[in-house]
Length: 247
Ligand code: ADP
Ligand code: MG
Ligand code: MG
Image 1: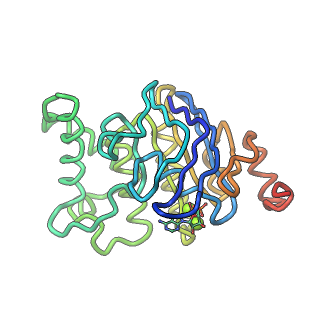
Image 2: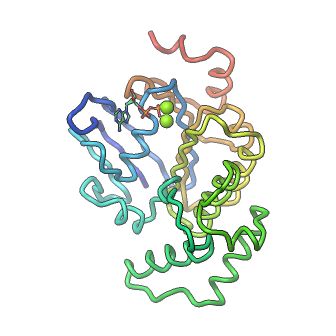
């Protein structure tokens, strides 16, 4: 599904941050990326999603066999790549529900499909909000306006379930994630996952991996993947930290 080859990227006018990333994600897989602060984890997720603050200086990002490096973030979204915090904006007057309806229909339009029927949309909203314990009054609130950390997280996971992407990239940058928020993310990922889709989960939290079973755990340090293993690697990292890998 996603194949990254020898990817190098830098900040516009700046130093190189990604220094030769190789990563292959197949349908049905959950990959976790861990690593010290400043390693380039968020940069990697931003570059896959197509954020424009970075310049790719070498390598390839192939999604379903097509090089997507020239695609705008919206085109990548239309192809089925979802990134958390892609839509973090506060939009007064636009409810959680109306925002996601518009996003779904925009995706359909890009594929030449008609708007989703009202009944199907309502069914989908009901199904996914029930999964996440989201109440009616939350769905009616203005997007992200005054949302707590947990509410933002719940909205983000709701967006993921509603948009039903092929590849979901979740960057858990927030060091303030409490146990409830971790559970929201874990439950969301577990109900999202199937044989046809994939998840790239970037996290500092070993604890999150107690609830989500990753197929692969990668350690990213100084712009390179320096080790890949299974979920036992995450346990080892919790016990020993990163230093033993860094020399
Ligand atoms: P991580 O998510 O692993 O903590 P980041 O990808 O956020 O790491 O950052 C990697 C390095 O690149 C850090 O040294 C960070 O300061 C720098 N960096 C990332 N994005 C930018 C940016 N837009 N402007 C300046 N420096 C950046
Ligand atoms: Mg960081
Ligand atoms: Mg980060």
